[in-house]
Length: 169
Image (cartoon, rainbow, N blue to C red; front, side, top):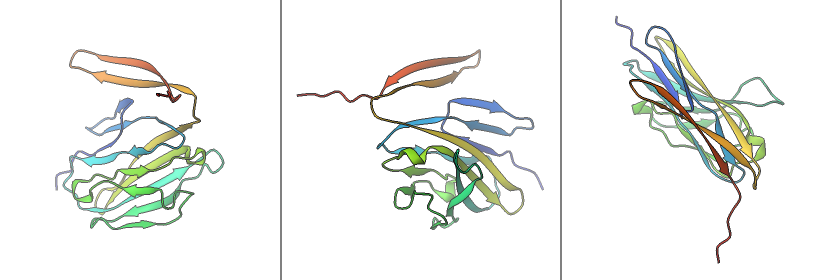
């Protein structure tokens, strides 16, 4: 049996290359309090049958990962332990395309932590990616890191974003 190349991706800031064709893309997400955020996770270059997608969360207070959502191949989702996310997390992916993305609505300060997406299949086991999420209060600013790769080089651009709302009359 031929082994497939597996790629797990999260929305990008940095990319790390691993040996034997396995590439894992990860990035830190920063969101403003009260906004929505999409956490993207995808397994590509595989012919294996997906068993399930598991989402976990850890925080500074609880550094051990805790499962909060299971997604089955038929698209059925099961909330295991809400971690304060109950009613605010939606599955927006597509298991038939190995897309395990979720949306967190009305982000709270307690949502800050590391989210882990795990794709499980029977033959190869589990493929994991971590997505750190930082929650900013309103009227704050942060630096967004954008990495652009071309054939010849990799450029990194830092952009300062101000979260203050502007009133218009």
